[in-house]
Amino acid sequence: MNRVIMAGAATLGLMAAGAAQAQDQTFISIGTGGVTGVYYPAGGAICRLVNRDRAEHGIRCGVESTGGSIFNINAIRDGELEFGIAQSDWQYHAFNGTSRFEDDGAFEDLRAVFALHPEPFTVVARADAGITNFDDLVGKRVNIGNPGSGQRGTMEVVMAEMGWDMDTFSLVTELQAGEQAQALCDNNIDAIVYTVGHPSGAIQEATTACDTVLVNVDNDVIRALVEDRDYYRMATIPGGMYRGTDEDITTFGVGATFVTSAAVPEEVVFEVTRAVFENLDQFRSLHPALEALDAEEMVSDGLSAPIHDGAARFFSEAGLTN
Ligand code: GLU
Image (tube, rainbow, N blue to C red; front, side, top):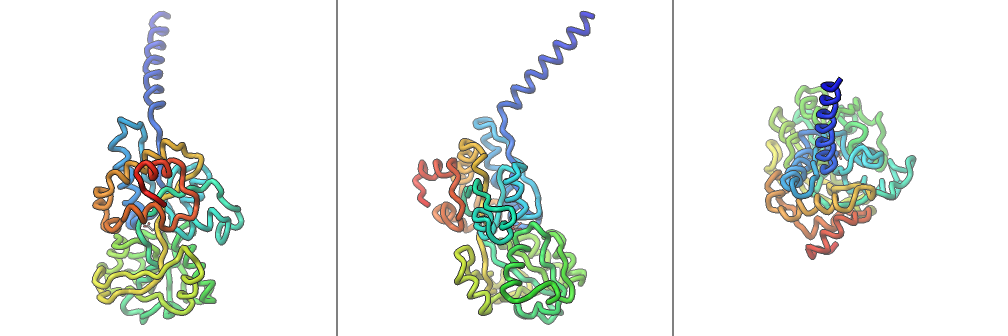
């Protein structure tokens, strides 16, 4: 009997120590996108900088590969993720309850933390498909992206403006971002549409594994769309960045943004923001699509939801104005 009690006491002692340790730790997850996109490595870079100071702040940051922007915002809303990366257009629509967020209503607790890299709406076509500009997608086999991804949402907006629907194409696929390069090179589709930072692993794969070209997405409809909406802007993908495309590509684009919920504590958001901004040179060096980040732009560009109090406190302490 004694022995049993003693064993029990010892176990309890261990559990108490474990519980105390767990209490000192705050777990946060960042929702990103496909592993060959830019969100996933960007989220990994944020976590790496946060985890480095774990002994001081007790935050343990993990990164999750997800379906993309709209999935991330919905998961933050449901409390399944603390942070996520999302396109500026979907941040806007989620906060305002418009477009794809009309049915669920405005996500009023959505908070912006900071802006990341630009994301041009990128169309890559097989070189043998006879596609030299965006309008040539009519009648072709096109991957419009998985539901939940930002590029799928943005493609649907563009299709509506162009007067296109699913029947405009000879085949529509809904492949995940990470699956589309191979489908293109296997000749299962003629073109992919991916709103992503550059350079990205997925576009590198699509342009090196087989003969492909990036095409311009520039016509009156696109120009009018950009004119009308603050979260869109014209964008250039520099010639020579990818094999097969030596000329600059003109398209439109959005910005990647880092978002959270008002329900996430101020101290947590402050520490995450601090980890990135106090190590910005290192952050920029962790992925080539992050190289051109600028602190002043990061506190203002494409942030339509209110800035989270924790980020705002860091920006004001650091003398950054948004
Ligand atoms: N912009 C894409 C999306 O929102 C993700 C791009 C990436 O993973 O880098 O779904």
